[in-house]
Amino acid sequence: MPEVSKYEILLNELQTLEAQVLKFRAGYYENTEKVKALEEMLLTTKKENESLLEKIALYEEQNQSFDFGHEEKILSSLDIREKEELKVKLQFMIGKIENYLSS
Image (cartoon, rainbow, N blue to C red; front, side):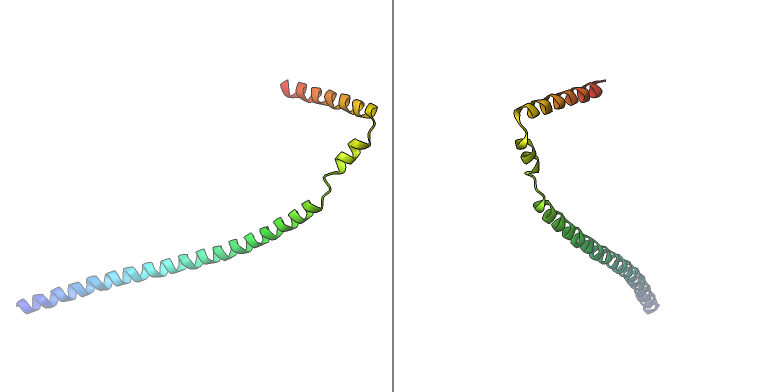
């Protein structure tokens, strides 16, 4: 009789181990799928990042070629009377904007 119970105990332990192995196996496959999905997302993000870096480089190149001194050339070509007229017009426009914002 004692040997039968040892045999049953061994079978129960084996069944428990088998259930744990199946559980771990299912978790492994689930994690494998998650890792694949994350790797795909990573590749997509890297491609998008590369594309954005190329756009940044293009915009920086265009920005460097833009002439910022153009406004200074226009202002320096005005005589004193024209500068005063421009100043008065700008002050008038600023006043209008301030009135609009305050109301």
